[in-house]
Length: 359
Image 1 (cartoon, one colour):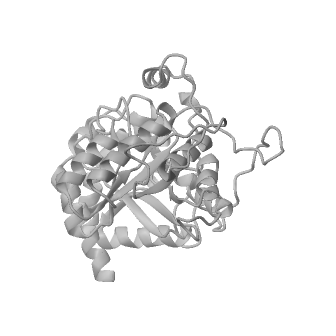
Image 2 (image 1 turned 30 degrees about the vertical axis):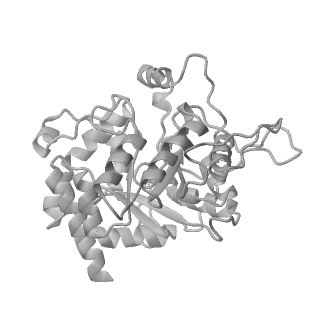
Image 3 (image 1 turned 45 degrees about the vertical axis):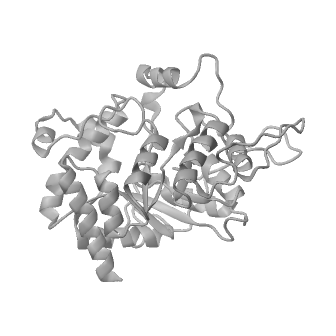
């Protein structure tokens, strides 16, 4: 709660919580619970989920949970929705069509040459999760999150159900109405989070919703994600034009060398995620240096390490400017991870000071 209070004091607009499971080093099993606690500890900053994993819950339970928080803390809630891990879903067929065709990835409007955009933003090669297909820990997570025999609802349909329940317009094909109380009429901003120009971007655009593109986890596909969303966008009662936030992982300190030292644990922490070990408690710099490391390990995390923004406030703000310019982002969403809480707070504070100085 302290970090949320401090970021509110620093002038940040939003504070989001991600949903994670079976990760010893990440506390994020229930965004709704921590959001309710955070809302009670703050007063003005918008709070939200970044994001709820819809693959193992229902539209109704999601709307009821966030509707209850909104009833207690009205007008401050962002409901971020994402798909959970599982087989990829295809976009819906057009009306009157049969099976949907496989759609090519959108061509980003910003060109990439030798792994960089014209302004110098790093866009690495696409990372493959093929090594995790059939991994026993991935299968275990799916087993524990889903009821036996349950089949996740199509993501686009589930988002439609969330929106219908919020508007009070939900009807079954037979015409039976359902009304979520609390939830119906809740004053929440609905966001879709996505890492590519596929189903999530299309769903956000088709519904005229805000979209969060994920640079800090999937830097290779951030441009196609933003472009795919904009290409699919249709104006809605909520938005008359596309609205994109782009995430970045940053560590800010008084100088570049200190920041690099604070970020030393990032590579082994990412490795623990990408080997399905589950995110380890974030190591100290000394602990990180003592861990065994191989060339395969380096390659496994290279794209994430190369695209983490680490340095002084000026260094990081300059790189964030490049990210905003290359993606056309309306907002930037930053996440910071360090071993010591005080270093994390200071990182947010120093960056806020630099942004205020730049106006």
